[in-house]
Image 1: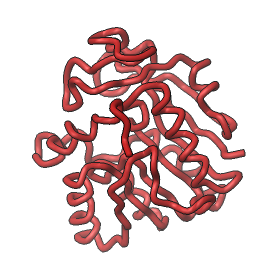
Image 2 (image 1 turned 120 degrees about the vertical axis):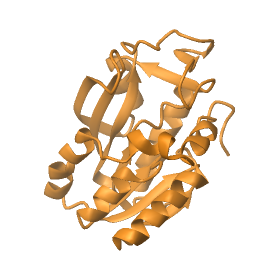
Image 3 (image 1 turned 135 degrees about the vertical axis):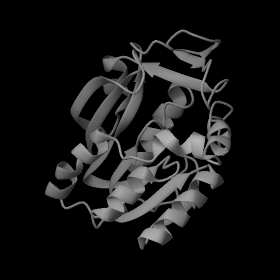
Image 4 (image 1 turned 135 degrees about the horizontal axis):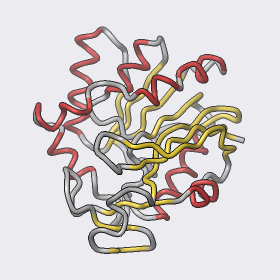
Amino acid sequence: MSSKFETAHEGWDAAWSTDKGRENWITPDPFVTGTMPVLKDRGCVAIADVGCGVGRHAMYFASQGMTVTGVDESGTGLGFLENEAEKAGYDITTAKASFTNLPFDDASLDAILSFNVIYHGNGDTVSRAISETRRCLRAGSIFFGTLLSKRNSDFQLGEEVDTDTFLRTHGFDEGHPHYYANASDVVRLMDGFELLALSDNVHRRPDSWHWHFVAEAV
């Protein structure tokens, strides 16, 4: 069951229902495509796109011959992904589930992506999401994705509802909690993982800093 902090999917469920809401979330992010050589070098086959939205990365993974499951709490996003996968001839499994309660057996996956997802909550949300991710991965598997940086211009805007956790003041997930971290926070949160790469990057708008991480399950 989601906690009171895990509510952002409600806003995104509405967003995914329109062309306008989906328009910026169709093309795979270069960080994700750029991590593919790491996945291939390690022989990753079974991958989950956790918080898949409308499925831009799930579709990309399928195009690379991987066995893909798209996970999201948005039924609208999953429905769009299912339709796109059918049109493309991809066999992508979908599951409506929270990122803190994943529908996978222990040590059953080679890789998990969580892109712009697990920071939708508070610090405890992020910690539980990472713990759940580790449960589902085999030792040596790859966890990669993003977290919000304290350099982000939204940090400390809106109501602070928990430590380093603020209600978003704009966008599809306006009014929903977001957790912000610095580098030492990321290192601390990655219990059960060894960080292979960590960088702070601007996304589409100025000062929209996000941590990009690649980690190995240990």
